[in-house]
Length: 300
Image: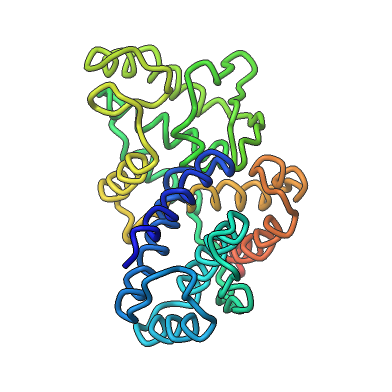
């Protein structure tokens, strides 16, 4: 395959980092999807990106479906490659976008997964607040549940972004959009304990860091590191199954709406650009209320 293929990918990654300001986690997804298409090009003896045609794209999609790939995964790959070729078209590296006419398969409508209040208590109880790492984990879990912020946003929080007097945190969301999100007394207590004790001990293992959450070596805790911590917390709890990072975000929104918060407020707190992204929680809340009713009403 032509060396220009890898050069084009490198330019696209720089575009995502500098112009789009995407998180490293998102960029890795793009890189994986595009590299997979490069492998397909090699198998089909397509040497240059300018040689890719609509018919080649159809064969590529057929291969994905033959591998029993989910519609959600296929849709993501189409979106990644469409953006890639759109960038190449803008840079005049190709003459057309072969993915422009490909329709993205509609994903199966699936309600977001979330934790019930008693399940959240089990997660909090699984954090050993007597150790520096346990204090960090408790503060991390409390903040994620209290604010509904994304894991990628949480990993970027600096110590100076916290306002303990107003109980708010400055969050940098997608596209460098900033918003202030409040947090409650439970999160405040956990964060103060971590900052005054656990974080200072972790800092002794490394250099001075601006980041709020640190790893065991005293360095910044990455988004991937946060995901690993959440997995370990659920392993220590009595809950079964796996935790994915967005479950805490879904739980935050679901519990707010179940207790009477209006959709516009939840939209603002989550940092959603469109209200339609928040509306899914009305359906989740109905399920939540039904389960709560069935569990607690004496005549249910």
